[in-house]
Amino acid sequence: MNNALLKAVTILGRKYPRPTMDNVVHPNSKRLLEIQEKYRRYEGNERVGQLVDVVLRILIAKIEHSPNYRDRFSWFVEELMKSGWKPRSYGHPVNYWNEPKPYGNRIDENFSYDFSAQ
Image 1 (cartoon, rainbow, N blue to C red):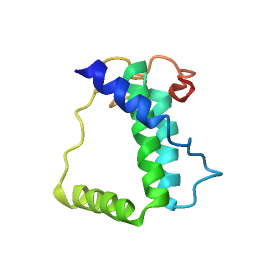
Image 2: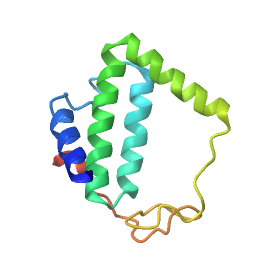
Image 3: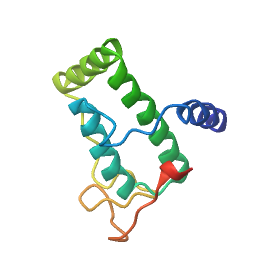
Image 4: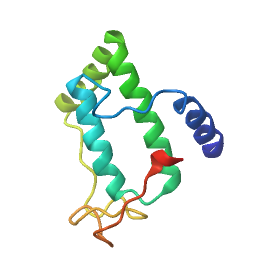
């Protein structure tokens, strides 16, 4: 199931234009791009990284072009903030993750993988 999901979402996501700081206008799109760049510095699992990359590509495209999607996504973010959503445990994720402690277990200061090149 994971392979089929990854393949389907990746094919769909690559049909959307690649968002960049130069071609997006909404502040939350820019925030997502900044977070995505930070994420890429930590993620070492190519399959997960590719999936996150295309999901963000789709999400940012919807935020940029549809107030309907933009406002609904913002609603989810607002609800998460109000809900008391629990942060992850220290030391997690445990595999192929290069974030500094206390969450990660940084391996290499220069570690980075470009999932978008796929």
